[in-house]
Image (cartoon, rainbow, N blue to C red; front, side, top):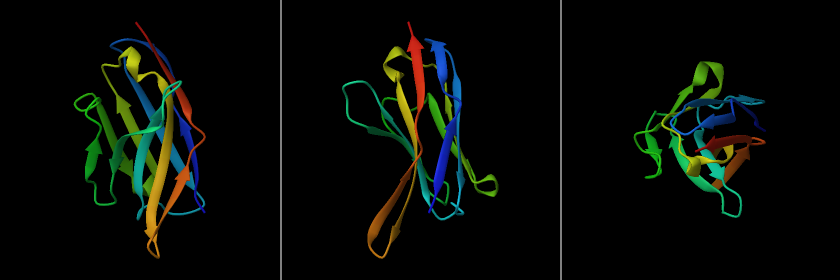
Length: 119
């Protein structure tokens, strides 16, 4: 079992920056894919970025060049550096850890942290 706790959300003006952190407990996450999802009001949750245990990253087109995902396995933590924030980045951001186990995907979620970007 993995417990994920996010921190670092808040309110900023457009063009500003925020850094989210997500620390895991209950299990070592070195073998997990780690990701950040977000959900804006009235919209479905969407994948924003992911990073494999080997360090390969993937980003949604809407955040490429602005956001950076990274991980520190020694600290059981994944980070999300968000720069040049736009009002459309406003959402609840969720940390996710996932892996395959016996052919099934296991997903663990944090409680979410609010990011609000004002114009």
